[in-house]
Length: 327
Ligand code: HPA
Ligand code: ZN
Image 1 (cartoon, rainbow, N blue to C red):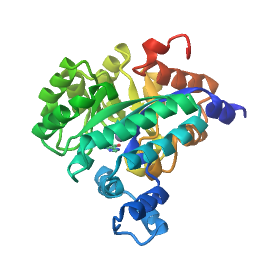
Image 2: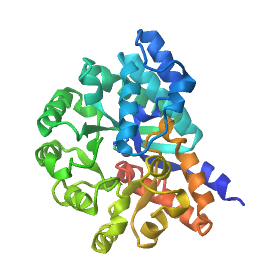
Image 3: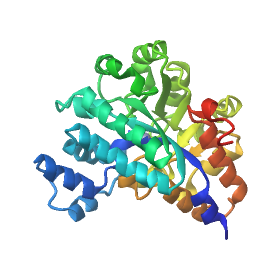
């Protein structure tokens, strides 16, 4: 069929991609050597073999260990640049990247080192690859709200380098309600607001993210399928869900792609988008996600492909500026 080619070639936006989750084992080892960081894994192969996850936390433990090789501005640049080359190959025209500053500042890496390295790569992605890229600063929800507030204040000298804030890390036991003050502060600063909710957490966490944090998009959100009333609200308000199919399989959020709630969400009129989450850890970049998904869902064809990719462009925070160029 013509569908794989269409999926691969079509222009698309990526709205749920953690830049630290694009760090491939080869680059982890190269940076470890460059920086004299000792890794608890003997080789690239041994590290890759550790990528067998049973839930979100089992992934996060390894993901934070991998990020420990990032020390200098150039390390953050090199990590982001490697992702942008893959994004360009996948015909990503716009990407909104999550980054986790607390993972780095806790190790003594200055906020400016993190943001300036990533931001310089974003500027080069536009200039050299014609990929537009923005940054979204994520708070680690397993840490306190005071820590998140301090992180936001530390990032203010670099306010022009990021467009929004998000919420990630261990979801269960860390509901959106824990972060109301820091999201209110971010709103005052004119930042866009998003949050991970309904990946492992219940539909009530999605409701809290909307009602208490006033987020504009929900990251993951797949457990919305358990609440008919929430499904109606998400459809009526066209709240985008940034869904990550291969991630959901690897972290055992769903049994397999054929069993994914995406068809139910799309049929109910939700603004779902397809994204890669942490592609170095979950077995693929955005086009790998699209191809695997359409391969597993024989009922889906060109109509669904167009709808999903259009949703990605329309749900981006660049959509107003870009209207007419993309749509
Ligand atoms: N969920 C929560 N935290 C994360 C994820 C995720 O999918 N990826 C990176 N940090
Ligand atoms: Zn995520």
